[in-house]
Length: 121
Image 1 (cartoon, one colour):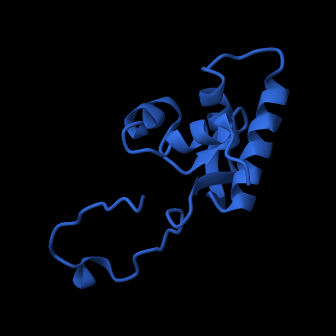
Image 2 (image 1 turned 135 degrees about the horizontal axis):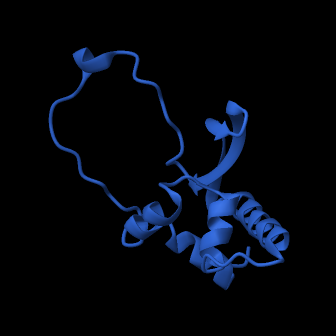
Image 3 (image 1 turned 90 degrees about the vertical axis):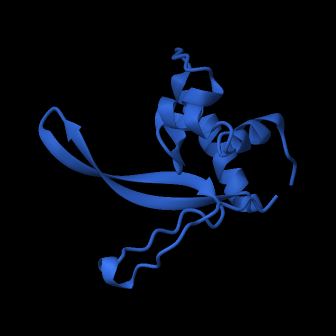
């Protein structure tokens, strides 16, 4: 596994110090391919947009293969010209942070107290 400059830059998008910027630009992680391509290319839309998207996707898939990121399939509701539709989107996040469980118990089984985020670096 080679850690290239592009992979390092993508990993910085998940860093806590950059999270506010990333969330403001493209939304909260896990991130999709078009959002990552947007951030990697400085928000510029060029004629080679398709190439930029494919390049970002290949890099993200390589990071999944290397175990740096996790790939998650998400169904989203989108507004289109013909009304609402659902789309299946592939998103990428840090390993171990993409699993979402539905709360079946409600407030009855909630644990009172405070939480602290611990970085495992």
